[in-house]
Image (cartoon, rainbow, N blue to C red; front, top):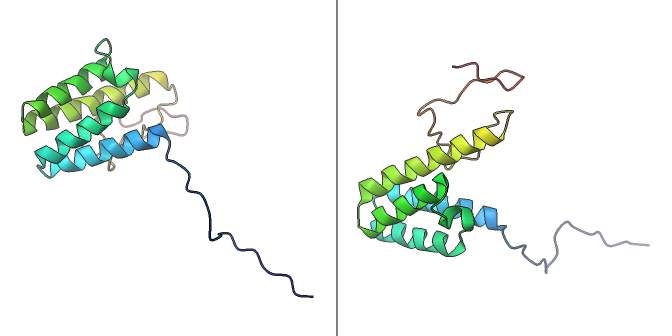
Length: 135
């Protein structure tokens, strides 16, 4: 008797929707690429999309992340590409600092395109206990 094999994929597999965190990270990745490419109009569109899907942390000006995100938006709205690039770097730095404060193991936070704003050009060296040995 022949038994048909079952493969790992089928003709109909519903696509799972990306998580809000994944969408946000992808949005920031695209924004960074457009800023680096000097594409102001697309960076403005990226920011608008991030703003629409943003959570309270990004939209609140009562926290450092929200303040940095707002500064980024103001620079983009003013058409200030270099100011937007600096505001984006500040947003990365603030996010990394908060991540490090909330994680005692000092695990590396997710970065966009492998950048590490706390140590440009190099990553901290950590021991097996999570202690930064490069400092």
